[in-house]
Image 1 (tube, rainbow, N blue to C red):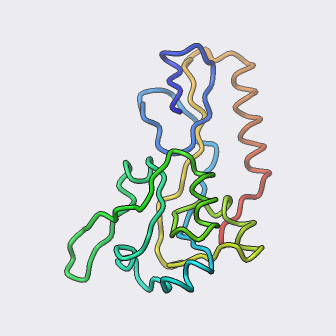
Image 2: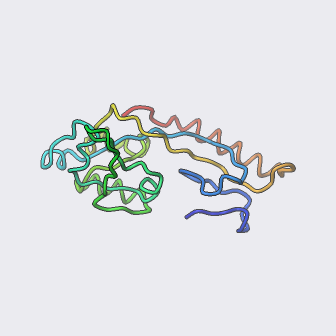
Length: 171
């Protein structure tokens, strides 16, 4: 859930995705690329999409934030931008991944989340030529001018830890 540090008693909130309150100070910690993924079994049953507009005729599994951010849409051959209506939408990206691995549809996942499943053959990246906006990981905090040392140290440690994680850049 979104934690608004200006309204709740938290010093720092780590947020993945678009920060709903852009007026709060924040530090971007990382940017995670993403792509479309499906289970081999799903692709065997429904075929492999060749272009993004093919998603209009596929079963898609979305994270609600992706839908709200307007990421589930495509441009048809006629140049019309059409929304892609997902079969299922949830707020839980792990559930989205699990449903995709189970062969229920095509999902937009970060390369980091899908990497192990791709290596194990449980997921396949589809439409790799489609460039999707990356997912941001941000630290949101309240103090602007006189940030306590403990908060700055925590944010610095988070940035270093995420950078050291060597997140996948390609799948």
